[in-house]
Length: 362
Ligand code: SF4
Image 1 (tube, rainbow, N blue to C red):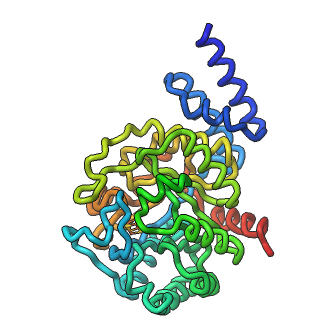
Image 2 (cartoon, rainbow, N blue to C red):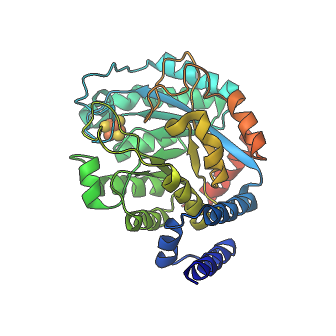
Image 3 (cartoon, rainbow, N blue to C red):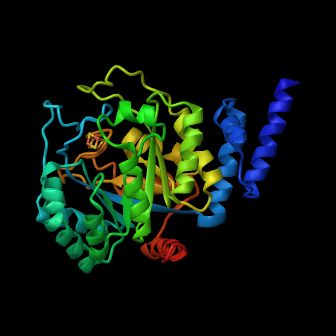
Protein backbone atom coordinates (compact mmCIF):
# COMPACT_ATOMS: atom_id res chain seq x y z
CA UNK A 1 0.00 0.00 0.00
CA UNK A 2 2.84 2.37 0.98
CA UNK A 3 4.55 1.63 -2.35
CA UNK A 4 1.36 2.49 -4.27
CA UNK A 5 1.00 5.72 -2.38
CA UNK A 6 4.62 6.62 -3.16
CA UNK A 7 4.12 5.74 -6.83
CA UNK A 8 1.00 7.84 -7.17
CA UNK A 9 2.69 10.75 -5.38
CA UNK A 10 5.64 10.48 -7.75
CA UNK A 11 3.37 10.36 -10.81
CA UNK A 12 1.46 13.36 -9.54
CA UNK A 13 4.65 15.40 -8.97
CA UNK A 14 6.07 14.44 -12.36
CA UNK A 15 2.74 15.30 -13.99
CA UNK A 16 2.95 18.79 -12.45
CA UNK A 17 6.58 19.16 -13.54
CA UNK A 18 5.68 18.14 -17.10
CA UNK A 19 3.07 20.91 -17.14
CA UNK A 20 5.72 23.28 -15.72
CA UNK A 21 3.72 23.95 -12.58
CA UNK A 22 6.25 25.06 -9.92
CA UNK A 23 6.99 22.26 -7.45
CA UNK A 24 6.64 22.82 -3.73
CA UNK A 25 9.43 22.29 -1.24
CA UNK A 26 8.00 19.00 0.06
CA UNK A 27 7.65 17.74 -3.52
CA UNK A 28 11.28 18.54 -4.29
CA UNK A 29 12.34 16.81 -1.08
CA UNK A 30 10.27 13.79 -2.12
CA UNK A 31 12.00 13.69 -5.51
CA UNK A 32 15.45 13.81 -3.92
CA UNK A 33 14.55 10.71 -1.90
CA UNK A 34 13.57 8.60 -4.91
CA UNK A 35 15.76 5.51 -5.03
CA UNK A 36 13.88 2.63 -6.68
CA UNK A 37 15.46 2.33 -10.10
CA UNK A 38 12.11 2.32 -11.93
CA UNK A 39 11.10 5.51 -10.16
CA UNK A 40 14.47 7.13 -10.86
CA UNK A 41 14.02 6.20 -14.53
CA UNK A 42 10.62 7.98 -14.52
CA UNK A 43 12.19 11.14 -13.08
CA UNK A 44 14.93 11.03 -15.76
CA UNK A 45 12.36 10.46 -18.51
CA UNK A 46 10.35 13.52 -17.49
CA UNK A 47 13.58 15.54 -17.30
CA UNK A 48 14.56 14.45 -20.82
CA UNK A 49 11.15 15.31 -22.23
CA UNK A 50 11.39 18.81 -20.74
CA UNK A 51 14.88 19.19 -22.21
CA UNK A 52 13.53 18.18 -25.59
CA UNK A 53 10.72 20.74 -25.31
CA UNK A 54 13.23 23.58 -25.12
CA UNK A 55 16.36 22.25 -26.81
CA UNK A 56 15.19 19.43 -29.11
CA UNK A 57 18.03 16.89 -29.32
CA UNK A 58 20.83 19.43 -29.33
CA UNK A 59 23.68 19.44 -26.84
CA UNK A 60 26.04 22.36 -26.32
CA UNK A 61 29.78 21.97 -25.77
CA UNK A 62 32.19 24.15 -23.79
CA UNK A 63 35.96 24.33 -24.21
CA UNK A 64 37.89 24.71 -20.99
CA UNK A 65 41.04 26.77 -20.53
CA UNK A 66 42.33 26.47 -16.96
CA UNK A 67 44.88 29.23 -17.39
CA UNK A 68 46.26 29.54 -13.85
CA UNK A 69 46.35 26.98 -11.06
CA UNK A 70 47.67 29.45 -8.46
CA UNK A 71 45.19 30.42 -5.77
CA UNK A 72 45.14 32.63 -2.68
CA UNK A 73 42.33 30.65 -1.05
CA UNK A 74 42.15 27.55 1.13
CA UNK A 75 38.97 25.73 0.08
CA UNK A 76 38.96 22.51 2.08
CA UNK A 77 37.79 20.39 -0.87
CA UNK A 78 40.22 21.68 -3.48
CA UNK A 79 43.51 20.38 -4.75
CA UNK A 80 44.60 23.86 -5.80
CA UNK A 81 44.27 25.44 -2.32
CA UNK A 82 47.10 27.81 -1.49
CA UNK A 83 48.86 25.67 1.10
CA UNK A 84 49.05 22.55 -1.06
CA UNK A 85 52.77 22.53 -1.72
CA UNK A 86 52.74 19.12 -3.37
CA UNK A 87 51.33 20.59 -6.55
CA UNK A 88 53.22 21.81 -9.62
CA UNK A 89 51.42 24.99 -10.62
CA UNK A 90 51.35 26.96 -13.82
CA UNK A 91 50.19 30.33 -15.14
CA UNK A 92 49.75 30.34 -18.91
CA UNK A 93 50.97 33.31 -20.96
CA UNK A 94 48.57 35.43 -23.02
CA UNK A 95 49.86 33.74 -26.17
CA UNK A 96 49.33 30.25 -24.72
CA UNK A 97 45.77 31.15 -23.65
CA UNK A 98 45.07 32.57 -27.09
CA UNK A 99 46.50 29.53 -28.87
CA UNK A 100 44.46 27.07 -26.79
CA UNK A 101 41.29 29.10 -27.17
CA UNK A 102 41.73 29.26 -30.95
CA UNK A 103 42.31 25.52 -31.19
CA UNK A 104 39.11 24.90 -29.22
CA UNK A 105 37.14 27.28 -31.46
CA UNK A 106 38.51 25.50 -34.50
CA UNK A 107 37.48 22.15 -33.00
CA UNK A 108 33.90 23.45 -32.91
CA UNK A 109 33.02 24.14 -29.26
CA UNK A 110 30.16 26.58 -28.57
CA UNK A 111 31.89 28.56 -25.79
CA UNK A 112 35.31 29.11 -24.22
CA UNK A 113 35.41 28.92 -20.43
CA UNK A 114 38.41 30.86 -19.09
CA UNK A 115 39.04 29.53 -15.61
CA UNK A 116 41.58 30.09 -12.84
CA UNK A 117 41.94 29.85 -9.08
CA UNK A 118 42.02 33.22 -7.34
CA UNK A 119 45.58 33.76 -8.54
CA UNK A 120 47.11 36.60 -6.42
CA UNK A 121 48.94 37.89 -9.51
CA UNK A 122 45.60 38.94 -11.04
CA UNK A 123 44.00 40.17 -7.82
CA UNK A 124 46.92 42.44 -6.72
CA UNK A 125 46.18 46.19 -6.37
CA UNK A 126 42.37 45.79 -6.54
CA UNK A 127 42.57 43.62 -9.63
CA UNK A 128 45.20 45.55 -11.59
CA UNK A 129 46.71 42.22 -12.66
CA UNK A 130 43.63 41.52 -14.83
CA UNK A 131 44.52 44.26 -17.35
CA UNK A 132 46.37 41.94 -19.74
CA UNK A 133 43.74 39.25 -19.38
CA UNK A 134 41.06 41.75 -20.41
CA UNK A 135 43.07 42.47 -23.57
CA UNK A 136 43.48 38.74 -24.25
CA UNK A 137 39.69 38.32 -23.99
CA UNK A 138 39.25 41.22 -26.39
CA UNK A 139 41.61 39.58 -28.88
CA UNK A 140 39.89 36.19 -28.65
CA UNK A 141 36.51 37.84 -29.13
CA UNK A 142 37.65 40.00 -32.06
CA UNK A 143 39.21 37.12 -33.92
CA UNK A 144 36.55 34.46 -33.27
CA UNK A 145 33.39 36.09 -31.86
CA UNK A 146 33.06 32.98 -29.67
CA UNK A 147 30.89 33.28 -26.53
CA UNK A 148 33.16 33.51 -23.47
CA UNK A 149 32.66 32.53 -19.85
CA UNK A 150 34.87 33.91 -17.08
CA UNK A 151 35.38 31.66 -14.05
CA UNK A 152 38.00 33.52 -12.04
CA UNK A 153 36.58 33.71 -8.52
CA UNK A 154 35.16 36.79 -6.84
CA UNK A 155 36.38 39.34 -9.40
CA UNK A 156 36.00 43.04 -8.42
CA UNK A 157 32.85 44.55 -9.91
CA UNK A 158 34.64 47.24 -11.95
CA UNK A 159 36.85 44.55 -13.49
CA UNK A 160 33.76 42.50 -14.34
CA UNK A 161 32.44 45.52 -16.24
CA UNK A 162 35.76 45.73 -18.15
CA UNK A 163 35.50 42.03 -19.01
CA UNK A 164 31.93 42.50 -20.20
CA UNK A 165 33.01 45.36 -22.45
CA UNK A 166 35.87 43.20 -23.79
CA UNK A 167 33.39 40.51 -24.82
CA UNK A 168 32.76 38.21 -21.84
CA UNK A 169 29.20 36.83 -21.91
CA UNK A 170 29.10 34.70 -18.75
CA UNK A 171 30.28 34.92 -15.17
CA UNK A 172 30.58 31.67 -13.22
CA UNK A 173 31.39 31.57 -9.56
CA UNK A 174 30.07 28.62 -7.64
CA UNK A 175 28.76 28.91 -4.11
CA UNK A 176 28.94 25.07 -3.84
CA UNK A 177 26.32 25.26 -1.04
CA UNK A 178 23.88 27.93 0.11
CA UNK A 179 24.03 26.73 3.70
CA UNK A 180 26.27 29.42 5.25
CA UNK A 181 27.50 27.08 8.01
CA UNK A 182 28.53 24.36 5.57
CA UNK A 183 29.99 27.03 3.26
CA UNK A 184 32.26 28.24 6.07
CA UNK A 185 33.67 24.69 6.36
CA UNK A 186 34.21 24.37 2.62
CA UNK A 187 35.34 27.81 1.46
CA UNK A 188 37.46 28.57 4.52
CA UNK A 189 37.81 32.27 5.33
CA UNK A 190 35.75 33.44 2.34
CA UNK A 191 32.78 35.73 2.66
CA UNK A 192 29.49 34.00 1.79
CA UNK A 193 27.56 37.20 1.16
CA UNK A 194 30.27 38.89 -0.90
CA UNK A 195 30.27 35.92 -3.28
CA UNK A 196 26.48 36.00 -3.62
CA UNK A 197 26.50 39.77 -4.04
CA UNK A 198 29.05 39.63 -6.88
CA UNK A 199 26.73 37.25 -8.77
CA UNK A 200 23.81 39.64 -8.36
CA UNK A 201 26.05 42.47 -9.58
CA UNK A 202 27.14 40.41 -12.60
CA UNK A 203 23.51 39.84 -13.51
CA UNK A 204 22.80 43.55 -13.09
CA UNK A 205 25.53 44.53 -15.53
CA UNK A 206 24.09 42.14 -18.10
CA UNK A 207 26.29 39.06 -17.79
CA UNK A 208 24.76 35.61 -17.95
CA UNK A 209 25.27 33.68 -14.73
CA UNK A 210 26.27 30.14 -13.85
CA UNK A 211 25.73 28.93 -10.29
CA UNK A 212 27.08 25.60 -9.07
CA UNK A 213 26.87 23.07 -6.25
CA UNK A 214 28.99 20.29 -4.84
CA UNK A 215 27.27 17.25 -3.40
CA UNK A 216 28.81 14.70 -1.06
CA UNK A 217 30.37 17.37 1.15
CA UNK A 218 27.99 17.03 4.09
CA UNK A 219 25.05 18.63 2.29
CA UNK A 220 21.51 17.48 3.10
CA UNK A 221 18.48 17.26 0.81
CA UNK A 222 17.10 20.35 2.55
CA UNK A 223 20.34 22.20 1.63
CA UNK A 224 19.96 21.11 -1.98
CA UNK A 225 16.37 22.35 -2.13
CA UNK A 226 17.46 25.65 -0.55
CA UNK A 227 20.10 25.94 -3.27
CA UNK A 228 17.52 25.43 -6.01
CA UNK A 229 15.57 28.31 -4.50
CA UNK A 230 18.69 30.53 -4.38
CA UNK A 231 19.46 29.64 -8.00
CA UNK A 232 15.93 30.69 -8.91
CA UNK A 233 16.30 33.99 -7.03
CA UNK A 234 19.58 34.67 -8.84
CA UNK A 235 17.88 33.96 -12.19
CA UNK A 236 20.83 31.66 -12.94
CA UNK A 237 21.09 30.93 -16.63
CA UNK A 238 23.14 27.79 -16.12
CA UNK A 239 22.93 25.54 -13.05
CA UNK A 240 25.48 22.90 -12.24
CA UNK A 241 26.04 20.12 -9.73
CA UNK A 242 29.13 17.97 -9.33
CA UNK A 243 29.91 15.10 -6.98
CA UNK A 244 32.77 15.73 -4.60
CA UNK A 245 35.87 13.68 -5.29
CA UNK A 246 38.21 13.57 -2.27
CA UNK A 247 41.57 15.10 -3.16
CA UNK A 248 44.88 13.89 -1.78
CA UNK A 249 46.78 16.39 0.40
CA UNK A 250 43.64 18.36 1.33
CA UNK A 251 41.73 18.50 4.66
CA UNK A 252 38.89 16.49 3.07
CA UNK A 253 41.07 13.74 1.64
CA UNK A 254 39.53 11.10 3.94
CA UNK A 255 35.92 12.02 3.19
CA UNK A 256 34.13 9.02 1.79
CA UNK A 257 33.38 8.98 -1.94
CA UNK A 258 29.70 9.33 -2.73
CA UNK A 259 27.88 7.34 -5.37
CA UNK A 260 26.84 9.37 -8.40
CA UNK A 261 23.15 8.64 -7.74
CA UNK A 262 22.52 11.95 -5.96
CA UNK A 263 24.27 14.06 -8.60
CA UNK A 264 22.22 12.42 -11.34
CA UNK A 265 18.98 12.87 -9.44
CA UNK A 266 19.78 16.53 -8.79
CA UNK A 267 20.56 17.07 -12.51
CA UNK A 268 17.09 15.67 -13.28
CA UNK A 269 15.39 17.73 -10.56
CA UNK A 270 17.20 20.85 -11.82
CA UNK A 271 15.73 20.13 -15.25
CA UNK A 272 12.24 19.84 -13.73
CA UNK A 273 12.67 23.13 -11.89
CA UNK A 274 14.56 25.00 -14.66
CA UNK A 275 13.39 23.33 -17.89
CA UNK A 276 14.68 26.09 -20.18
CA UNK A 277 18.14 26.55 -18.60
CA UNK A 278 21.52 25.08 -19.35
CA UNK A 279 22.62 22.18 -17.15
CA UNK A 280 26.13 20.81 -17.57
CA UNK A 281 27.33 17.23 -17.68
CA UNK A 282 30.90 17.74 -16.55
CA UNK A 283 33.66 15.53 -17.90
CA UNK A 284 35.64 16.56 -14.84
CA UNK A 285 34.04 14.06 -12.46
CA UNK A 286 34.02 10.72 -14.31
CA UNK A 287 35.38 11.64 -17.73
CA UNK A 288 33.87 10.20 -20.88
CA UNK A 289 32.58 7.17 -18.95
CA UNK A 290 30.14 9.29 -16.97
CA UNK A 291 28.79 11.32 -19.86
CA UNK A 292 25.86 9.19 -21.05
CA UNK A 293 24.33 8.88 -17.57
CA UNK A 294 24.43 12.64 -17.03
CA UNK A 295 22.83 13.31 -20.42
CA UNK A 296 20.28 10.64 -19.64
CA UNK A 297 19.36 12.55 -16.47
CA UNK A 298 18.59 15.72 -18.45
CA UNK A 299 21.87 17.64 -18.82
CA UNK A 300 22.32 19.59 -22.06
CA UNK A 301 25.87 20.98 -21.99
CA UNK A 302 29.12 19.00 -22.08
CA UNK A 303 31.72 20.97 -20.15
CA UNK A 304 35.47 20.83 -19.73
CA UNK A 305 36.53 19.90 -23.24
CA UNK A 306 40.32 20.20 -23.16
CA UNK A 307 42.72 19.82 -26.06
CA UNK A 308 45.29 17.04 -25.52
CA UNK A 309 48.93 18.16 -25.37
CA UNK A 310 47.91 21.65 -24.20
CA UNK A 311 49.45 21.10 -20.76
CA UNK A 312 46.17 22.15 -19.13
CA UNK A 313 44.61 20.66 -16.02
CA UNK A 314 41.04 19.82 -15.04
CA UNK A 315 39.42 21.03 -11.82
CA UNK A 316 38.32 18.13 -9.66
CA UNK A 317 40.27 15.57 -11.65
CA UNK A 318 43.58 17.12 -12.54
CA UNK A 319 44.43 14.85 -15.46
CA UNK A 320 41.45 12.52 -16.09
CA UNK A 321 41.00 11.75 -19.81
CA UNK A 322 43.03 14.81 -20.90
CA UNK A 323 46.30 13.66 -22.46
CA UNK A 324 44.68 10.60 -24.04
CA UNK A 325 42.43 12.95 -26.01
CA UNK A 326 39.20 11.74 -24.45
CA UNK A 327 37.97 15.27 -23.82
CA UNK A 328 37.48 16.11 -27.47
CA UNK A 329 34.39 16.56 -29.63
CA UNK A 330 35.40 13.55 -31.71
CA UNK A 331 35.10 11.32 -28.63
CA UNK A 332 31.91 12.93 -27.41
CA UNK A 333 29.90 12.79 -30.64
CA UNK A 334 29.43 8.96 -30.69
CA UNK A 335 28.16 9.03 -27.09
CA UNK A 336 25.63 11.70 -28.01
CA UNK A 337 24.56 9.58 -30.96
CA UNK A 338 23.98 6.57 -28.70
CA UNK A 339 21.73 8.80 -26.56
CA UNK A 340 19.79 10.05 -29.62
CA UNK A 341 21.42 13.48 -29.32
CA UNK A 342 23.53 15.70 -31.59
CA UNK A 343 26.12 18.44 -31.21
CA UNK A 344 24.53 21.90 -31.37
CA UNK A 345 25.99 24.46 -33.77
CA UNK A 346 27.46 27.85 -32.82
CA UNK A 347 24.33 29.46 -34.28
CA UNK A 348 22.08 27.33 -32.04
CA UNK A 349 24.06 28.40 -29.01
CA UNK A 350 24.28 32.07 -29.92
CA UNK A 351 20.53 32.15 -30.54
CA UNK A 352 19.91 30.76 -27.05
CA UNK A 353 22.21 33.19 -25.26
CA UNK A 354 20.84 36.13 -27.24
CA UNK A 355 17.27 35.26 -26.22
CA UNK A 356 18.37 34.86 -22.63
CA UNK A 357 20.20 38.22 -22.62
CA UNK A 358 17.15 39.95 -24.07
CA UNK A 359 15.03 38.61 -21.21
CA UNK A 360 17.17 40.59 -18.77
CA UNK A 361 18.07 43.58 -20.95
CA UNK A 362 18.12 46.75 -18.87
S1 SF4 B 1 38.04 26.03 -5.28
FE1 SF4 B 1 38.85 27.75 -6.43
S2 SF4 B 1 39.05 29.38 -4.90
FE2 SF4 B 1 38.92 27.47 -3.78
S3 SF4 B 1 41.05 26.81 -3.44
FE3 SF4 B 1 40.30 25.82 -5.32
S4 SF4 B 1 40.95 27.13 -6.98
FE4 SF4 B 1 41.05 28.33 -5.07
